[in-house]
Length: 289
Image (cartoon, one colour):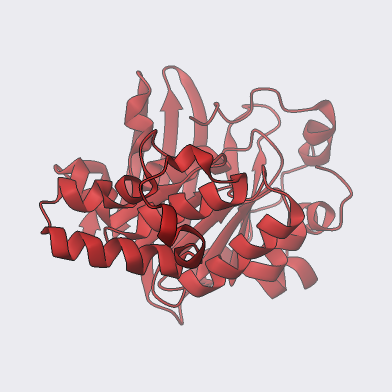
């Protein structure tokens, strides 16, 4: 679970934004106007008990595109994506204020959480395969949904093939998923996420615990995923965001109130090559963070 935004922020980060009296870039409201928005976040604030972790976030996530969330540790990136499928509800005292719409449905008041999390899947920072067989990991969601054995068999093969694991795992589907390497486990978790045919896939630093070769394979998979799914990825790796993302959102910690805020959002090329806000330009150039 993500930690409250702002806790543990460095003095350097505070200095970097201490003069942050300039208005937040207007580009964030119009960045995806030429693409259909799959998710629309409006005036979203988030609290852990009495602590405000996010303040007044406005963001549109384009359908079947990759949107990256970047920014220094503690600025609320991971917290933000947990609001998209209400994973924050696992933490007592966590609550949201504002609106998040999936197509035309309001997520914050949606009654069927199982259906919401089927439509919006999540892949975590560290691979978390269930302590069961490779086959059962991928079949877990379809079984909960009551699919037939034939449908589940077909989905397991299709999902593992999509994740580039079928050829590696087809002869050992009944072996424990824990027997796979770290990179294979992460691809298995992606296969498990897509088995139930979600519409959006959230990825919280999916490559941070992987070696360079495994990272490359997961990045290649993400590029394939976006042909069929909308992807939102949290990353600390600026090169990864620049390689993968169609759109990038830059977040910071407000230096006095210590909540996370969205500074600038737009096409990735603009964020990295011609950002409107000086703080964005400083961050992507490595001056702080």
